[in-house]
Length: 331
Ligand code: PBG
Image (cartoon, rainbow, N blue to C red; front, side, top):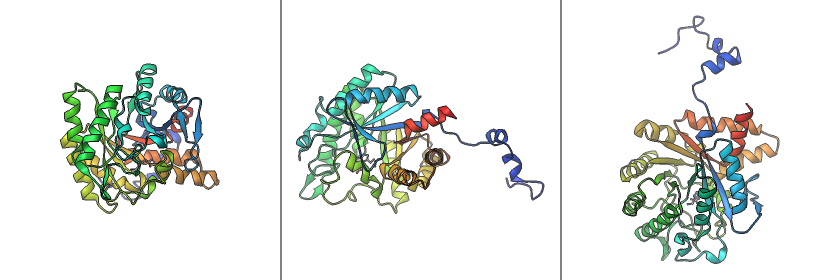
């Protein structure tokens, strides 16, 4: 339906007052749309700043509980854990990944006992445990798929056993969603949800994250043999279709802002719960400009997140989550 010609239609009529603008607002952002990614580390009473992610720190588990409680009180429904693994526990066989007592699994149990209503999401990939910094096993310089999937299943089962509500396979191996779903059903974890990093691109925007988990210096080569070429939209949609058919409950597009076209296409085509990850490089970019006084932090944070809703996303993983929830509460 096209609007009447001028002056019958004056688009500015409905922009005249704040109340009119609110009446016709199409999209909105709320704390309930957010998943907060958090970096954790060993130790006690530690908040270790990450220089390339201003305002973000690695938290020891006691600090994690305090931060998670704050997020929960602000109405954020879920938190996603990313471990900074001690260098001595990074090996070629990655066995720490499925250790029931590893940092992530201890954090899951602690959070579920202290804050049972807060949803705990995990990351499934070998990079925090791999001497090579890759998401899969490295054999003769290549990343082997099927052997990696078997390890990822062990890793995911250990997380489910610890009480994780949502598993987030971020590794981009083929067949992992089906293998994981089968194993979860077989082991009685029927209600553990999978939020698949289905359309995950081989992006330059992950840099600060790799600093945060201590993988930057280790990574040999790049992740182009398993993550999607940023030029490929149809391939991304095929990955989403595949993951949904294998038993993913929700799907993710990652990174976020440079891939809003993919978010819209995924929502339109599949009409399933769709999330985007506003990744570390996106956060760092905005924060760098804010710290220089070049951008208004609160404005761009809210505007950037609203863009995901407009693009069809049901929710967003963002390092801004607690700040956004606080800003929304003030508004
Ligand atoms: C690891 C993983 C990555 C991110 C989430 N899980 C990095 C990568 O694939 O290299 C990136 C998140 C971010 O940049 O904020 N599998």
